Image (cartoon, rainbow, N blue to C red; front, side):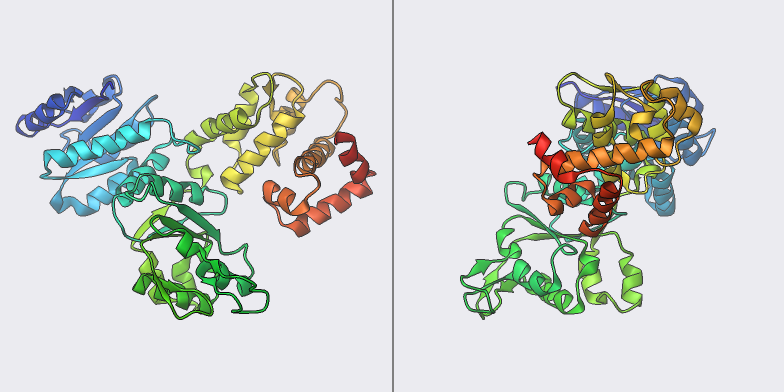
Length: 445
């Protein structure tokens, strides 16, 4: 496998040469620049190692300029151990990771191996922006430990995908990965789902059943939306984490666990702790290694690659692409629903497009400038207002999903990213518009 090319930006010859020798012995192609400005004038490398002691600019200024370059690649800051605060600042300024000097050669090579892993295609995970790569670098580090992980981020950012990434790069990768959405399970059932139960433990328990913790033994369990748990369940989760064992409901036999726990939430758990709705002791048990998945609007470089990923996933028949106007519309939108919303928009656009390319009109994004709509709207209906066209596209997309799930409203709402109540309102609105839902579904059968 070809090694990445590396640019070392280091003014000190005595500090540069040992690093260059280690990299060359490991098979990397290395170039050397002594000033920040010289480095910026050179062809970008796959990885740039940049010293915090540049003679002509600060490392933060250099990182800001580097981020503006086309095909800038990964930047890794090299800072001294006395510059701990600067190390954190470089991560905010665009560095994917950092090295504390003095460092061992194996630390440098281990970091580069993690970068190489990120550059290879990842299943169901697209990361082109430096913010995404930064999170994945941290996730890769986290994966090598056995500690609990807390993933935070807005709804729809892909927290479960990040949890799977941690699992797949851990020593437990061959074990099971079990995800539990704590918000989707009624509180009365959550304990039985998590801990299991024995026959006769409660009304309806006609046979013994293992819980999700048992199913995850030897692997990883993801407790998604953990902020929705009641205090009573929180207390029992805390005991499982402390004792590393679980008891089925109705049983006094402890089952030993060898699992890693990853929790995810879109809530501010610190605030929940201060408000008394989340246990402080459980919070500190979970928040050993925190990972924050930024919203899509903060990693714009990911928007088009993710869009193309969904096009390839959902398109049928002839290959489809995005028009230049559609690309501008996608990048310019603020994506309050994050990746989940983007996925739905692309699915709908594939259904509604009129040609080989998805246009800005096909996307039907809210608040799209009228001029852009007019320029890309199909000629077959030039007089239709944007609002009516958007409503028509939405109704058609809902019908498409209903057909896909044979009229099952729970599965349809899930796929649309809405509640079943919201779907009922949409269906009622469709009936008011004269759409015969039963006939529409039967005609597609």
